Image (tube, rainbow, N blue to C red):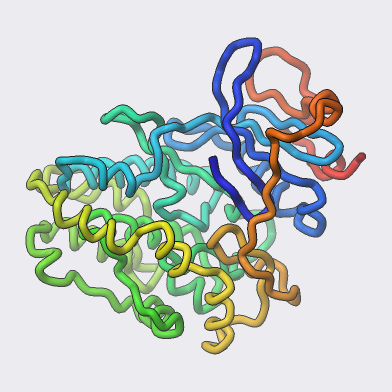
Length: 365
């Protein structure tokens, strides 16, 4: 289904119930030195339960792999579904963003910052027309109040807030900026910041230098533009919170227009977000190189499939490289040795309780 920096996601069926799930297969050898990252992701996923967030259901391990059993979402990525539609309006975009805001507001209330909100991490629950949006991928998320000041550069360049690029201490306001960028694209089909020169791209973001260009924004309401501007505010202290955004008339009222904008938006999405161009535009290695030229940072902790992270100072930059696991080819012996670590529901025994760390289990073999 998907490949990450050190994992592969495959679809599986639970034999006893026939239930379909997504399994994130992680090679332990690829986790050497990155244990904290996976511990953090699991800790966050254990803590949250929301109708618009992909749920962690179980954790298993074998001698060579760790398996996160995730809720299966089968409706596809956000932009792909919009392009496939024949009718699409501001109201549709408003409803989509409202779901994202509700989920992120829940995270923020739980003291969690996602730090990597982007369209690829917004998935439809199923193929039905009225399917809900689900937020996925908490690999870069952070729990506030852990004693660490958030100042590490992480996220995906086109969606990252100015204060992150500037390597200033930041807060959950970075998620609100990212939601503003997503809302911008949903209404025009192209990103607010773009330049073939990465250094100039980062300069645009640092200055919050974006416009509502004619003719692409001519049919978009002033309310929508004001909503986006409130989220894409350079000063995080003045930027809308999720609560404020949810109360805005474009979300809570009736100011979102019902005019069909599908033709113009889908045309721009096809042009600007083809898969090959997407990967090229947000290459993590190039990001770090140009951030150094801008003297915004000096080290890269690890890359996660197009996202950038500088959580481990002093480490040598590594290219965004997939280290996938072929779960389909696991040996019978390997499968038989899989040990249940956590059960999310039911009365089955818990070998790793909700208050325990998984660190001791990762490399016990």
